[in-house]
Amino acid sequence: MNLPNKVMTLEEAISKYVHDGDTIAFGGFVTNKKPYAAVREIIRQGKKNLYVEGGPAGGDVDMLIGAGCVKVLFNSYMANSGYTQVSRRFRKAIEEGTILWEDYSLDIQPILYHAAALGFPFIAVKNMLGSDLVNKWGIPEEVWQNDPKLPPRKLIVDRNPFNPDEQVCLLPTPKIDVAIIHVQKAAPDGTARIEGPVFVDIDIAMGATNCIITCEELVHPDELRREPWLNQIPNLVPDAVVHVPFGAHPSQCTNYYDYDGLFFRMYDQVSGDDELFKQFLDEWVYGIKDQNEYIDKLGASRLTNLRVRPGYGYVPGLKRR
Amino acid sequence: MMAIALARQIKDGMTCIIGTGLPLIGAALAKNTTAPNAVLIFETGMIDGAPQEVPTSVSDLRIAYKASALWPQYRYFGFESNAWKKNKIDLGFLGGAQIDPYGNLNSTCIGDYHHPKTRFTGSGGANGIATYVNTVIMMQHQKRRFCEKVDYITSPGWIDGPDGRKKMGLPEVGPQAVVTELGIMRFDEKTRRMYLAEYFPGITPQQIQENTGFELDLSRAVEAEPPSKEILEILTKKVDPQRLMI
Image: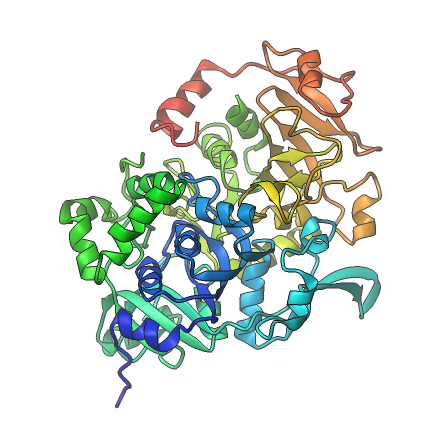
């Protein structure tokens, strides 16, 4: 078999596939398997005017907003739960009106991504009916109508054509330019294996025009093709495979590491203050060349302490505060 | 007391959807005490785990411990949206910043939506839970949080009374109880308006009315049973020794 080789550096992958004004979706969930290394690289490269499908977002998208990369956010939830009740850069941006945003239910975004993966034009659901998620739109109607990146409306409430007694909420499927997900194992050809919860990762990878995969381990294709039923993403889907150990730090990564609660605490403090946040970006993003430097900065003992205990899936008794 | 009151709502063998925040600790407490056979479901798709340590979020791998399945999120959605027809889920647990007399809940913003005074996380899974299953709501009991009209309806309750949900096309489920640090409110079967059901030891019904921004029916209120020493000990020593959530 002559398999393609999609391996590249993170710098190459981001500069090749992420463009100013793109719609980007990130994998993971709040404090679990967030593609943080890729987020830092996007910030380093100074990407602008991004339309971000937040899904269940946390510090990843909060950092992007704080660094001025985001134009529009499609939100359902944003926090480093247990550490920051409401992501602080996100909150400030909305309170000061410096980004556009739209609110959805956290059930709905995964369904929209699933619809995108299936090629559906829209979905019909009962969610959001009877709430202000339907009545109050964050993005003004004229922007919905005139922005070529957006469908003409947030949603339509209508009768179910097959049962006129029933009301349904119709939502257009997002057009995602690039999906970025972090996985445990990937082969150079693009075959990928996610261990633990998959959240929305497979759907955004399939629904997007381009897909960047960052991985803990880069393995030989035979290693993954021996048990293909354990793989969720076939080699045809990703465009770039990037080897980035600890690429989800400070979030969790099943079978590899627990979340770094002390880092989340630090982020809670710095993200609440303009000057401290600027210093944080200088220290942890701009001042760092690549993931190897990031790992060196964190230090071996810190990362060793986060290694999950086999049989538990987390680190029992980990100092989390 | 709130965590304990919440844990009491989870009876052994019940199936419950648990949201972020205080519900996580109430659920972990219930699982470790009175309801070891309760099935906990999370919007992340993690189903029927047995958390041994308090999770900080609904995606914390602590809730995946001994789980029955880790579904993609869309599977959770499918299970949730069919469950009300099959009676598969007993309760969902929600938190919020504002609530009105009909249990409509705000977890999005205070003030004008476009120019908010305070912005919160957004719906999370709360809107979906409120759409499809009976709910128990966790709140801090303050006058500004219990108001006649919320600034933004994130999660629909009984809307404006008995027919409210039907008119909107929503399933015939809704909020069952509101648990605060002062007591437990329930909703009248006929009018669907909130009334005081239980007040915690050391609290009077009048105090609760004073902390509520709308008129509350106090006529049915009884004093709640105090928590046992044993439960308090499990809560502080076993469930959350690092005081992550309490």
